[in-house]
Amino acid sequence: MIYALDSDTISYMLKENKDVQAKFSKTISGDNDYSIPPIVYYEIKRGSSLNSKFRVSAAWVSFYEKID
Image 1 (cartoon, rainbow, N blue to C red):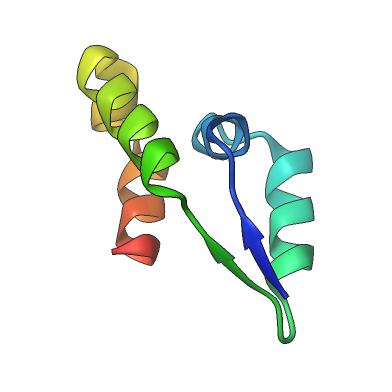
Image 2: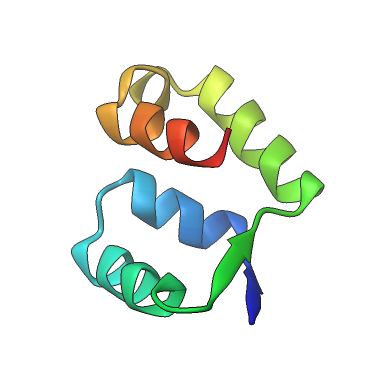
């Protein structure tokens, strides 16, 4: 199954919310996969350019390395 991530889920992951990270890890294990719809990608990318906390966040860099 392929799960489409929304901007809230990604934001919580970038803020290192342990509950969301655990659910995400559990969900994509096995044969499951995920996608990021273009509009969500744009929202997160745009939000990160306006918010310096996300620009320098290690979580942001790590997450982007996984999806690029």
